[in-house]
Image 1: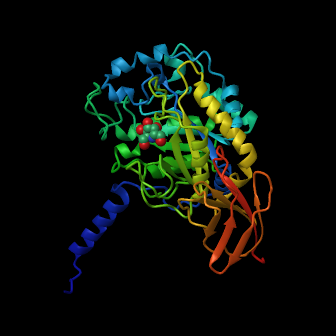
Image 2: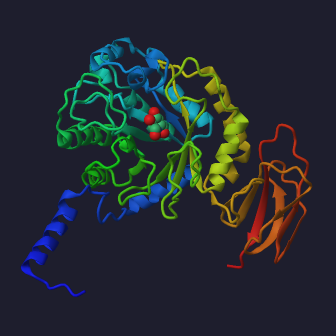
Length: 445
Ligand code: FHN
């Protein structure tokens, strides 16, 4: 059928274009070209491999996780009492950063505010913040940022876009309950003045930061989050700062890292991750050392150091970082159970770090037996689950000139032909979490 082009058709087309361009939600930072500093920061991010995630806020006082406001269906006036009891007199930024370093972690991502909207930093945008509402009266993120700069650790700020406290977070989202906020609010003011105002503070008052780790967009997945504006603001204020959105969706323009929650890239055991895995952006997988993110007094389900090591290895073999969370006590101390495990992981990394830091996912697809990582002409074969004497691997491009055990440098017998590579493995020791065989590959280039 041939359509006659009339002035009505043209008018409709113009209207449709107008609606699409100006009225539909902006889905990212249009035309985003990462700056050279940003691209460099992405590479450095990939090299770091292991980060410390910290969930800490006034909710920690109640020892029941960071969702307590929502889970107990508290009213705003009730939750407003909580900051009065938050006085972290044992908080020691130096000790926190030193612990991250001892664990072999290269960056820290801390909640600058969670879904309760409470700013854990000195914010002039509203008085719903640690300096004005708590007896502590100080800005722990400033102390942490200074200490990170001093000790050479990158600092990222987790920032919840979802807000259970601010009336302008309206219309409210999927996690809404009647907490006595009015049934009206100014969404544009929430995004452009409140949120962008706080992000400006975080990007100007704390020196160079690693980036912003967003969370909570999933509460209103179809809303217009003004991402174009917010992402452009961040990239303008600190071009090297990485935008890491935990929206569980395919990355949008302007986002610099794809992160997965409680899953490796491409997996979806948690039930909310996407199967899409970017082959352009650095990848990250977050998890927590027990079962909760924020301090939960009834949660003693700690992962062992060996489990964390294996997760880190699996993440690296999937070309991803691992961001491992702890929820400090409300007084600022870190649970000794976390501390001892993190220190053990750090000891393990001091021996095996070469096969993790600075690597990228290796030439072989991750499998049940283990994964590979690579750096320069080295391929690291991480044997996590194989006790037979021979391990057959798919073909690896280039000629292998050497195979050695990373732990003691002993030579490992191997054969290589067109069908692949066979390694003769020493028997796994009972306490060995990962047998690493280092292959030297000559690609002839
Ligand atoms: O709801 C949050 C949760 O409290 C925690 O912050 C995790 C960390 O990745 N993210 C959210 C759920 O996607």
